[in-house]
Image 1: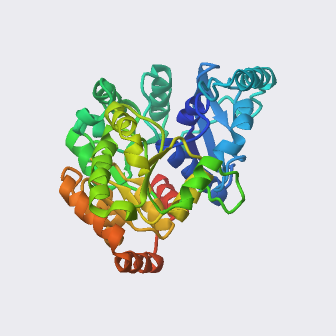
Image 2 (image 1 turned 180 degrees about the vertical axis):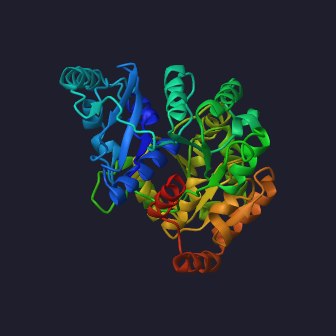
Image 3 (image 1 turned 90 degrees about the vertical axis):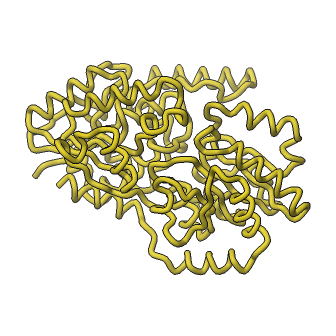
Length: 419
């Protein structure tokens, strides 16, 4: 029976420098964990370009399950994958910084890599690549050779925003992304797209997609994994946010997420509603082009205390914020899917999201929608949610009765396509 080899390159690269996972890395761990749980580590293996060993390795994925907590197990992961801890800026305190250096030295000396071996792929095995590989010619050449040897290689596409809307991506990322897509015919057998919108966008920027290379839509999930029910530690700074009513916005704080426009709308709502306005909590790491956002917050004292920032929250802390918020907002300018919309619904909370791109696919008729380019529309819809408790209750009742998509559903859909 053929096996599935899940590409873990992005996880190895990310784990070296980050203590939490977001976005694509979160999706990779969820899908892999469920595939292993359902089909077993014998049928679902790992494969990766190892950044320190500079070769392709096979990984025993038996340690990953559907409830795998990256934050809790990161040190073990680094040791088992024979990776150094290169995370910077974790603490400014000298003693804690020294302790972090000692821990990194311990990991380097204790790293075994016993779970790594030379790949054992057979021609009928499938390879699932869930993140783009940029500037990694040796690994791309390896995948191309495996395709020639008979392996089908499935490349997941989360979005093509750098090509479709380059002004929403980091400078130069459009060039890198074009190079990535131009190389895919050499090694990709099929594309997996996370939404109908992403499939349409991919076919628009790459005519070979859907013509020479088949495309399949495998939607992501609403389910949030990483709950706070297991008494995971919640930082005091996060807990105190729940002492007053708040509205939650989850996602990297960057230009594409439309954070500046949301803060401007909150300033307007402050004038409209006054002391009855809930606080806006921005939960996520700082991205690029955020100077205007933080300049505004500094100049206004976080809008007089009506905006708070929770940087790099853990999964458990995110779950705590979702559970305790009044509702959520997600006025992103463009998405390939929109994880925070589904996660909000998973916790039974109304999400006010953008009506652009894939986001209506995630929220369906359970969410409220705004034009992210129209501040007056955002002001009206969010203002109604703040002032109309009956509307919120009606929405929450509909959400509680809805059938939401789990990561088991997503993993099984992917497995069926690969099989």
